[in-house]
Length: 409
Image (cartoon, rainbow, N blue to C red; front, side, top):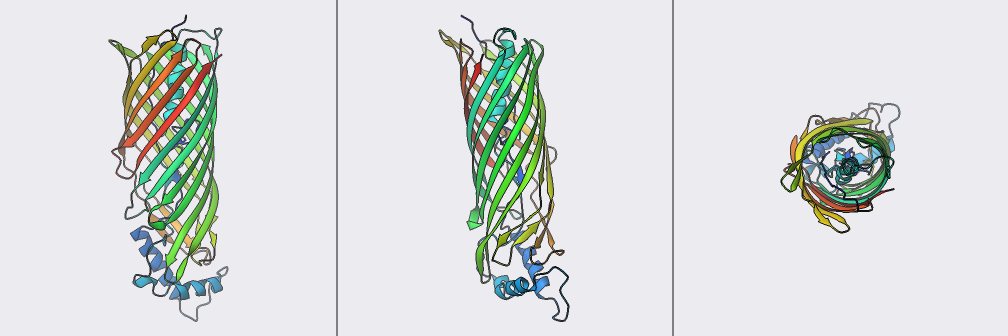
């Protein structure tokens, strides 16, 4: 009867890559930087000034080429009174703030499990000739909440995803594999501002190398395709309706981590350091609707570079059928990039003229806490469940729950 030694490390990421599911950690890191309509006070004030400047043009001035004067005149007539308090509410402004590709959920329960699985394979002492292939199937569910701020509207978001992966153990010290996955997220904005649906399809190449018995090095490289569908509730003056939009985007993901594997009595301790990179691009698009306040948004790029330092502690309990291992994990995360941005907005009816809106700068430091349970069978199959919580972040609170099965053959 072969005893499987389960020694795992941790990673963070942030989510969300993710967050899709090629690392539902990234997929939840999938996601981060999606356009969304908001209703922040500063953005509303800028939009009001913008409308005043458009509607206050001297009557004798001919409109620039391409302007829809019928729509512009209707908008000016219907927004009268909106500047003095109007009806408020809704998503008046066009600030396209940012949610992460996974609504900012933690980047990862499943990326952690994938990395842990690889370490289990190479530390189990089996060679590539003794069952070198592995398969992972891992669903995930998560939720994130963001409060209102001066610059951006708050939201509540739910995410569900599935990842499928296959890898090969080429030697006692090296595993290489690939995952494909998808996450779907729906964010509902506070104060009736509307909603945003996001789908992230991601493929990731990953590997684990053990240069020594007590050191593990991981790396991954991924590419994702994003689809966004937004609905912005516009309530301003006599205008009360919805503007809808759709666009696509892409993500490039990369990361590496180093873990030290050691024993502390009957406990397994695995301190680690990680570095994760995500670049997201969004294509320009125009909203559709009949409110006369439909907006056009230009191309946009976002960049996230995070480091995380933490540790994982676990204890394995031997059973006739294999082993059972509870674990706890923490990681301190620091964001180096993802700075505030100025986003250009303009009315669809008046191309060539617009205004700039700022987004919030994210919290530079936050904490990820995790707890989980895994069962390793003598046959080589592993079952796991993992809960991860993002906390100590001024803007974002999120959690994710992942479970899965890891099979060797």
